[in-house]
Length: 277
Figure 1 (cartoon, rainbow, N blue to C red):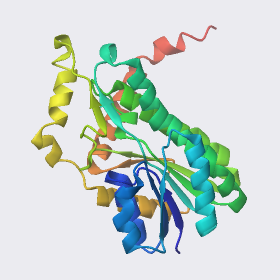
Figure 2: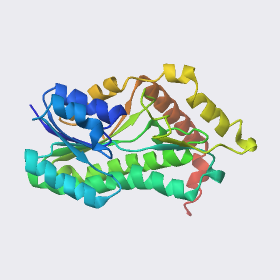
Figure 3: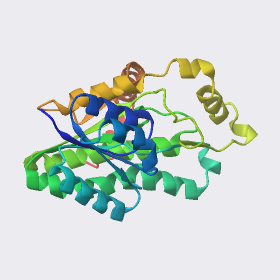
């Protein structure tokens, strides 16, 4: 059955892929981007099924205007994909606090704005599915990615609590946690790199070198495959609250879970000692 999708960060990468796959499947889409002109080609191809809107996810007033425009055009919002975001790589010690705030404002607060703006519509409808783009970084650790991963871990935590709040209202929530993808993520427009002090060259520096290597890029997944997974996810009667996306994410997520379980078991007695008898 045809649905109405609202997708942020639609100018490129995963967001663009989701928009294209949804349109090809016959769905109607409200696609948003900071530069709405990046969607002109899709508007020409799908004039009746695509509404392109300018939206800065960090501005609540933009969200409110987009919600009104979407309802005026299509009457409902069945699926919201909160996808817009950006990354940063750098040592915790030397990353400017202004950059940390921008990461949190875009990746976490932007998702919160979207939820707060669209949930009232879904509540009135009695149904809806909110899909939040998190990251495998919500489950693993990489030197240099502390703040990006922290913002994405917060998104996954948001999804888990929000799912419990809105389930009685007929609203589903899922955080997708992708691994690497062949997108513009490593380009300056999507990834800010803080060159490390020499003392961090073997840790943070190694991460930066890896991300910029041709070998790393050759292993990245196809955004179209991830987009197809998101469409399948939206058709599930009982979707997962968190899902690892991509072969690499599935492997790394399992390894991280195993390591965490081993550590928890190792330090169980010490942890239990915190409870006074």
